[in-house]
Image (cartoon, rainbow, N blue to C red; front, side, top):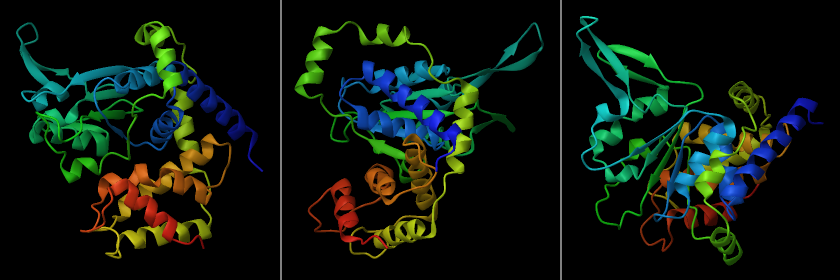
Length: 312
C-alpha cells in the first residue's frame, strides 16, 4: 500500500506535468522524463533541431517550481569564467570580490552546449557532478536544487563540437522533443505567445517541497528481483554482443535513481520492471556505442537489447 504522503506527492507531480503540458503541447512523455530527471537529482540533455521548444520547456519547468533560472547561449568564444564567474578588484574595498556567474542558478539552461569548445564544456563538469565550483583555491557550493538542462543541435550541423564522453556521462537522461503532431502544431499556431503564458504560471511545488520529493525518491523500494533484472541489462551491455563497451556501475545507479523517480510519480513506493524499461533508452543510449554492423542507432539498439533480455 502506498503511504498517503506519497499519494499526495504523486498528485502534485501530476499537476506539475499537466501545467507544463499546457505550454509545451503534445510532448507529455518528454515532460515526464524531464521531471523524473530532476527528481532523481540528475541533469538533462535535449538533442534536437532549433525551434521545437527546448528553451520553452526549461523556462516553464523553472517557473512551475519557482526556481531561479538562468540561460547561457554557448558560442565558440564562450570562456569558462563566463559561466563560473570572475574576481574583480574593487577599489572601495581594496580587495578582489568574486562576482558569481550564471552557473549559480537553480536551473541552468546551457543552450546549444555543443557550439562551445571543449574547455568551456568541461567547466561544467565539477558543477554537475559535485554541485560546487572551485574558484581561486576556494570551493563554492551551488544552490539546491541544481539542475542543468543542456541543449545541443545534431552533430551534423555546422559549428558544432561533439561532447566528450566525460560530459555525456554527467547527463542522467538524453531526450529528443521532435516535431509536434498535427493537432499540437495547430494549437501552437492558434495560441498566443508561449513564453508570455509561461511567465504567468504559478509554482505548483515550492523549493522545500521539491527537495523533500528528491529525498522521497531515495525511499522507493527496489526488490531483489528488480535488481536482478537491472543487473541482467547491465551485463548485456558488457557482453560485447550489443555495444563496444558496457555501462559503468555509476550508470547503473543512475538508471535505478530515475526508475525510482518514475515510480514515485506513478504513486508507487516500489520500482517495477516497466519503470526501468520506460527510462532505459533515455538513460543509457548516450553512454553507449553499438557494435560494428549493428545497423541501428544507440536508442534502437537499447530497445532491441531490452526485448532480448528476460525479466527474472
